[in-house]
Structures are given as structure tokens and as C-alpha cells.
Length: 285
Image (cartoon, rainbow, N blue to C red; front, side, top):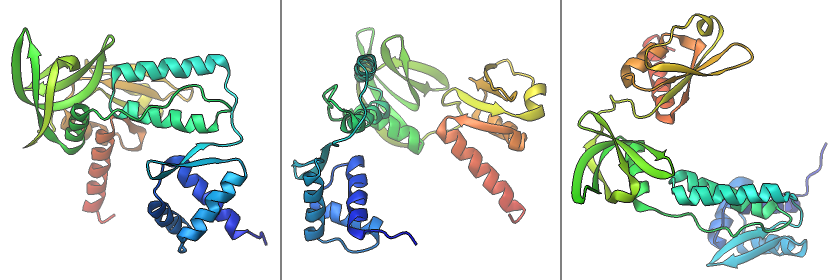
């Protein structure tokens, strides 16, 4: 039977927590108690932190939170890879793509901890209230009020948020404005507020990508608004649909059963799952 040193296990569990985020002492005690299924006191957690420090693991208390800065072992990236990281970081920062830049900054922070050398200063994620409001409205099916400038005039519209995108090197928001797909330069926007009005949900919110398998992939006839964007070695095809009505598309894809899989966006995958669950519920499954 494999013997486990409990104290060593707790140290590793604590390191895993600190690798993901920073914690106050109380939060770290609670998180470690949860993953270990036993109460971890301030005395024990402090002992685990000091053990890590003795082993060369750089854990510091910054702004009241214990922060894992550096591991004594890691990956030695080449100069080309480091330059690539810097270029991607600069592009992501310039484009200010909401969740994407926050996720990328988190990735950079984790790589920095595992790298044999610091290759770039990790800056805190940018909290852009307008992008956050736009994303919140998309995720929660709400319309937004957008104030923006156009032709030297101030405009205010109530619209459905569809997607964040790029137009060349410019960030744009795409909305459904009275049934028309409208693109607004982000730099022209002065304010975005989430309204209490629910989105209709019937407009195609973004390009939909789905994959077809087996005989369906070989016999499928593309619609006028579709094109094949990928072919797998096993014959499966990936299709891009740009304009079909949301509910019509979901109902059609549902008929294809297991031979069809929605790849993106996330809210379409979620709604398809709900359709399948509701259908199975009708038959007592």
C-alpha cells in the first residue's frame, strides 16, 4: 500500500492553489481546508509557506495576499519564443479584447512562474467597464444602451449586443440595431450600460461553427450562407454559418442527432444542450 506523508501533500495542495491565484491568509486557510477535507489553521498554513520558502520557492505577501512569484525549477524558453510572447501581449493589450486579454495576462503570469527567467513584466488585467458591460449583456441576454460619436454628433441607441470583433487593427462592437447588424468602432464609444430589456435571442449573434460526421458529412448540401472551413482526416467537415436565424438553425441541427456537433459560440452549444435535454424529458429519459 502506498504511504502518503500528509504534511507533504498539504504543501503540494497549497502550491497548486497559489499557482492559480493569490490569497489572504484567511482565504488560503479556507481554500486549503476545502481541498484537504480537514481544518487547516493559521499555524499550519504558515508552516507550509515557510517550508516552501526554505526550498527556494518564492512566496511573498503582497497587498495583504500571499503570492507565488517564482518556482526554483521551470522551463527555459528560447529568445524566439520570448519575443513571440511579447508580440502577442502587445497585440492583446492594444486590441483590449475583454476576457481574452484578462485570460492572456493570467497565462503570462503562470508562465512567468515556471520560466527560468522573467521575460516580461506582468501587468494586472485591464478592467474596462464598457467591455465588461457588453460581455455581461451578451452572457445574460440583455440589451445595452450605447453612447457613441458619429460624424461629429453624439448618438444613443438601445440595441442587442452580438460580438466583439476586429476591423483591421481596430476593436469594434457588433450589435443588432432595429434588425440591422451594425458595427461601431470601440474608440467612438463613450459609454455602454446594461439595460433591463431582454434581447430577442432570434438574431444570429455571431458566426456559428458546427461539425458534421460520418455519412452526413459526405452528403450534406451547403446552404447559401454556409461554407466549409475544415476537413478532418476521418472525413468530418467543419461548416461556418453566418446568417441563418438562430432558432431555425438550432432546430435543423438538432435533427442531425449525433452526427452534428456545434463547435461555437458557447451560448449556442448551451441552448442545443437544453433542446436535447427537453426532448429527452418528453420521453421520460
